Length: 288
Image (tube, rainbow, N blue to C red):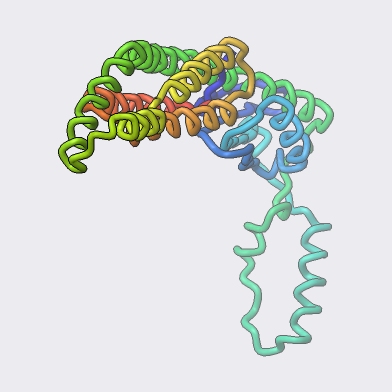
């Protein structure tokens, strides 16, 4: 199973304490980066949320928003939290000793502070159970979405890989004839340039140069990399980094094929290979 790092999931869950709203988005990233936005009723479960996410997701930039919508009766008459107000008052009194000329505290600002207004007490045990269940559910929905997207990415990569394989299969039988033609041209040019009749010396130079332009090793490594990419895609799991490394290796072989090219045909194939490899690499950037 191949997982994309791109996905979206949302959930609205009716609970004893109210309606729990969850929204989860993820995009590609080098590692797991989690951003949690919980309202005041749920902020106490932030550590729990991080543990659940880290247990289910490997990589990606994940943005999770969770809110608890209380019933109208529960939110109609919020009460002042006198304990919190007392703490704020004491802190303000202490701070005023150091800043005697500051303006008086704005009461509306105080009322907006977290914890000052206290709604009806919620069942924390039930809320935590609902929180875990709902978060696990939305995370599974996100994983399912990432799996569907991963299947599409796998299909695209396999299609490009097949085209790469076709180019490699095409260029292999061409090489002996291309090298022979180039050797013949080079021999004529060397005779004309040196006016030498030392055929053995010229033949040695041609053989040495033919060895330098031989790309059989590069084509063999490309074939090996193609097989390895197929194997990794079939095995599935967290394979993004391994596939990205293989794309770098394949691009290196394609570059070498181009630099050793002795004919327009191999230069064109080298360019086609690099385009296909870059297309695969763009898709692999989204794989976990």
